[in-house]
Image 1 (spheres, helix red, strand yellow):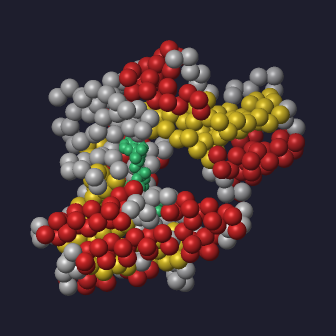
Image 2: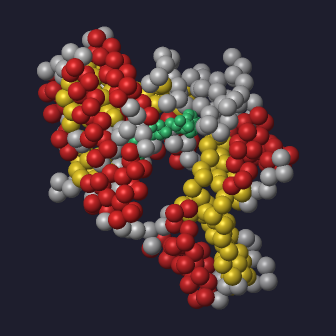
Image 3: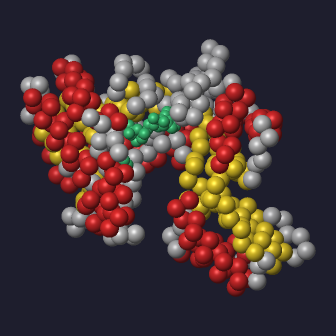
Length: 408
Ligand code: ADP
Ligand code: ASP
Ligand code: MG
């Protein structure tokens, strides 16, 4: 007998029929004698609908009230699932995040879980109850409702699994595992049997939304056995694992991409110490996160400075930059919010040379111009024009043989 945490995403609870299917699966797991905690998302489209409503009322909704609003989607699905389970004769009770003491900081709309008092959940499990918990939400010290950022139900599930010492945390979604890249963009993408935490973390932070970044961080930190599975069909899914010595690693595990990027440049900045600080300081003060940064080698006493930000922050960052450029007496500010970032990820990169040049060659062969490049130990990212996203991903997928199973 094991303790299993199962999480079902929006599509998996997207209709009454699907909620019944989830109930069936939960009951089957319970029938095997396991204790089960279920975390659910809002029905698909619901969170977007709520966010849209908020923006109709106010262009910049009050963050506290925004969280009160957007957390309601999950309250609907916990109740429906618990009802469906009870109707099948499987004892279940629903709980909001606050009711099971998921305590977060007060950073509304992107709160972090700081503590879970799992006593309540344990009592219910001991009584033989399936515990159904609302994903994506918690409460802060003062009892205010908070939310954990888009995709946050994954993190609720992993955090509960960690707090309870669960035997496995199963993330049920609309794909049957983690693929070499998003199968919606590359139909030849292949399901991976396993992927390391490290690689999954890179994939998630570089844009693969199959798991929320914080969920992967949490799972790695607390050694939570994590598996991504389909809620529609049976299968082994993908296990997120620690790197094993004897595991033959493919050089590249996957390709991630991010459509939410925008690029900004200040050109002709007088090249003096402190340029980067003067340019990025005000951007940081405005709470705008900067991703990639390039400063060109100075010529004729001036330099060009380029960086990327989230597309939602583009206008704001640009206004700040115009101001900075005037103060620094730079020549001009330029920007483009129709760019994307494509990244190759693989722990095997550590021991293999020539990956970057193979990547650049594959893109060049398709006539794709690279705007920016950034590398780290296990990833290489490029910024390209948005229109080249699909072509670029597919070209790289083929160039690195990702559609073929690795040689045994
Ligand atoms: P859920 O609502 O269940 O949380 P998400 O939409 O958040 O589901 O995540 C599943 C989606 O992630 C898939 O439908 C797929 O399009 C996308 N995705 C992106 N990258 C990958 C990848 N490498 N492997 C699998 N799915 C991916
Ligand atoms: N419902 C929330 C969202 O759409 C949380 C989640 O589904 O994980 O972002
Ligand atoms: Mg998700």
